[in-house]
Image (cartoon, rainbow, N blue to C red; front, side):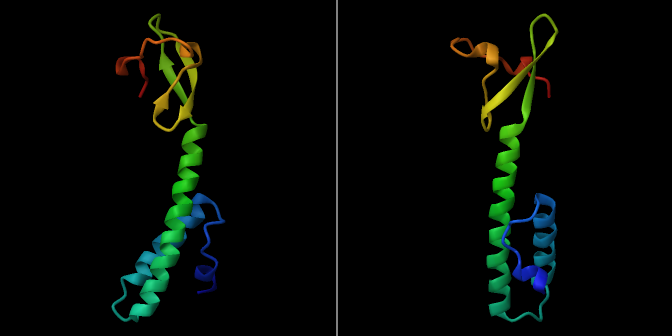
Length: 103
């Protein structure tokens, strides 16, 4: 149980996810007292927050590959999560269609 006391979200994404999965398994036990379940829930919410923050940070680092009309591949950076702004598009008003994205 010392591992669960350390559930602050400071570990890697994978470690946090394993701890979260372990907490869920423990919480499914019908023998746990309500107070223990609530404590585990609080720890779980901290881990969920930490995992979400780590995912957002990773998404910001992801490079988006787009296909230009001539068929070549252009590397672009993700300025904000879900918002595509290729380097060549800065200052232009025209948008990029979904068909230009490589998925």
